[in-house]
Amino acid sequence: MKGRMDENFEHKIRKAIEGEKNEFSSSIDKLSDMLSKSWAPSPPNISFQEIYEKAQASKVISFKKPLLYTIASAAAILIGAFGFLILQNPKVTPVTNELGISVTKIVGKGYLFSSDSEKLLALNEGESVGSGQILRTEPGSKLFLSIAKGEGMILEESTELEIMKEGKQSFRLRNGSILVHLHKNLKKDEFRIVTQTGLVEVRGTKFEVRESLKEGTIVSVLEGRVAAKSISEPNRGEQVLQPGQKIRLETKGFQRTFLSSEEQKDLGSKFLELHVDEIARSSEKSFSNKDDLFNEYQRLERVLLSNGETLEGVIVDMDENFMYLQTLEKEIKIQRDSVMEVIQLR
Image (cartoon, rainbow, N blue to C red; front, side, top):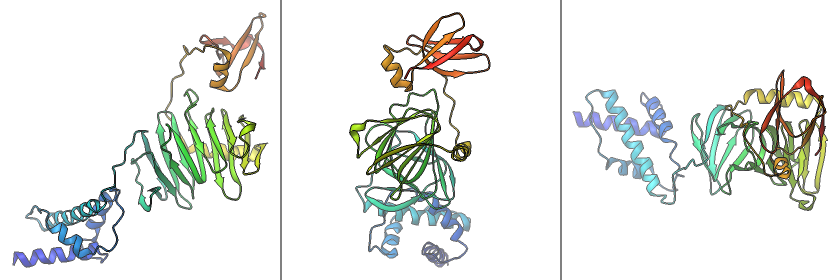
C-alpha cells in the first residue's frame, strides 16, 4: 500500500515538473525558482526519464506528513536533475563577485547571460553579478545596480550592459540607456563605459549614456564632468563635458550641444530614483602639482578675496556661509561674503 502511494506521489510530481497543473505545482514552482540560479545551460536530447532515473539514485529522507514528504521528494528530484545537468557541463564555473555589484531593485523583468551562451537567467533583487556577464532589461523594465559604495546605476528599458573583464569598473553598453550616479567625493578615474563608437571616462557624478545603431552614442551630463572619446577620431583627444552639455559620437565623428531646459528637467527627474551611499570628503587631500589637481577635477579656479588675497584651486563644495576650496596642500574653508570674484583658469 505504501509503495503504491509513493509511486502515486512521484507520478504527480513528475507531471508537475513536466508542466501539468496539480496540487503539487505550487511547491514545484517555488523549488524551481530557488534552484534556477544554477548557471548551467540545458544539454540537448536528454529526456525527463533519463534525468529522473539519475535523480532516483539520490537518497530521499522520508517524512510522516504527506506534504513534507511531497516537498522533500520534489526537492530530491529537482536537485538530482540540476546536479545531473551541471555534471554534463563541466566547463561551467561559479559566478564570482569581485566587483561587489548587486541588484538592488527590479521594475518588470531583468535577465543575465554570458557572452558564450544566450541562455537567459532571470535576476532577483539582492542577487550579485560579476565580470564577463551581460545584463538585459525588457521593454518597460528597469534594473537598479549598486556597483560599490557611493556608486549606482540604472539600466533603462531594452538595455544590454556587459560587465567587462578588463580592469575594474569597466562596462560595455551594447544597446539601450543607462544612468550613472557616482558620489561627488569619490575618485573616479577608474570608471569607464565603452560603446560601439566611443569611450566614456567618468570625471563627474550624474550622467546618462545612450547607445543605438540609429543615433550612435549620446552622453548627457547633469552634474560633474564626463570625458568622451570618439573611436573614429582618436587624434582629436577627449571632449570634457560640463553640466548641461551633451555629445553625440558617431562613426563619422562627434557633435557637442547643450541640453535644453526640458531635457535637463527630464534627466533630473530620472535621477530622483537613483540614490547612492554618502561618502565623506577628505579635507586633507593633497596634490604634487596643478596638473594633478586639474586631472582630478577637470577644472582650475582662482578666488579673489575682499582683502586683496588670491587663492587658486578647485571649489569642491559650498553652503550658506562657506566655500570649500581644494588647494595643492589641503582643503580650506572660505567665508562666502569675503569672496569678490571666482575666475575659471581652465
